[in-house]
Image (tube, rainbow, N blue to C red; front, side, top):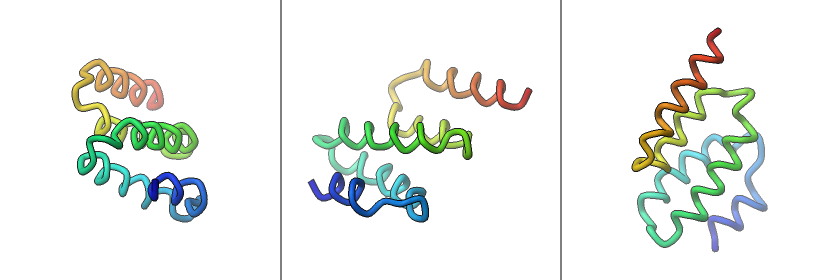
Length: 82
């Protein structure tokens, strides 16, 4: 898979945000790759959430059917503001 190869070999701190946005586009484009792309997005978000808490909201794109995730993201953001 080209996406997986790019993720493993070419994604660095300087371009990870761009790659993450590319994943959002590719996720909607290729249904057969959804699970793999979602896992990459989660890995990226987990590694960046301390520096960029707003990335939690970006994960909603990969979980449109999961209504409880929206509530969890909102709770997480509220907790950070306190």
